[in-house]
Image 1 (cartoon, helix red, strand yellow):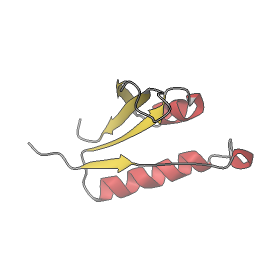
Image 2 (cartoon, rainbow, N blue to C red; image 1 turned 180 degrees about the horizontal axis):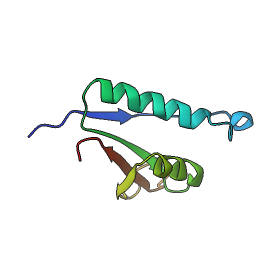
Image 3 (spheres, rainbow, N blue to C red; image 1 turned 90 degrees about the horizontal axis):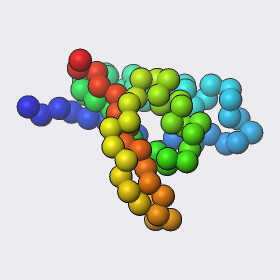
Length: 87
């Protein structure tokens, strides 16, 4: 059947404010909103080289589903990550 999905388009925290939990707070607020809309899944794309973001999303329960090749204009691959609210 049809599953409503939320999509994270962009999350950014200025370098001088990283490590303060701001990114976690932003993503958690997004997760709350998606759950309130009764979506079954939330997904995002993140640069494979963005280790801090990948760790953040992993810590929040996102899993890597795919690695789209040359996803970004500069040729870098992405990780397609998602969190499932149904199972």
